Length: 263
Image (cartoon, rainbow, N blue to C red; front, side):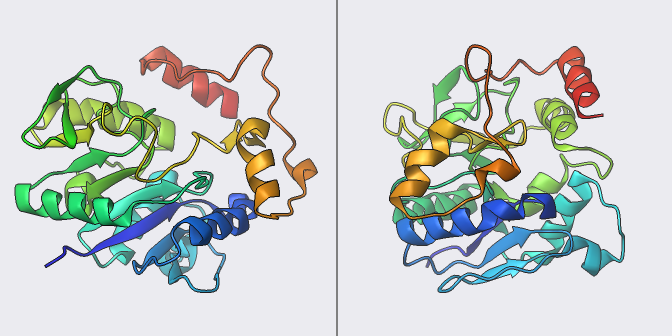
């Protein structure tokens, strides 16, 4: 018997222009999806034909006008009925067919072996990795700087709670949440990159939005192919001086620098 899981599309109301493209591509490349899909929002509602989308509307549910990223994240946990979650974000635009049978197999494996987390994305966990008890999975090291990654992943909802603090934004969570994960002997795995080198189970490019602007290389051709009409001027296009910035190692200095850039 298959273990139930839900899909969480983590978002915010200010990114509602991504929802139409995201679910258009989701429906095209995962046409028979039967899972409940939770769209993490503050106030806004959203629906898409043929998909069971349940906006969390965190501010309406809690009665709080201002919520931190982590408070919205935990509110989604309270809303989701299943123990296991496929974590996505609104700019993880599918560009090829998902593999729901393999995703379900991994969820079953998580339940059978008490696994906390399985990374599904090549740019997620950093490594180095070691072989595990299962050929599809590599073990994520206890001290991996991105033992927890906010790229596409599967996780046990209740076990993930222990790593989240209500006051944190996503950059603080990825820093301090990983520090907490270094101290807890939970089971963290990622896909075997030799078998699945290209985000094969949920194919997407990381990511469609960079510094709050569209990444032209990710979205233009894909959206045109699927006749997705977007007013790109609303966000504009990300224009790096040299190349798309690579993720910096998690350090206190880098976290503080990132926070200052957002003020």
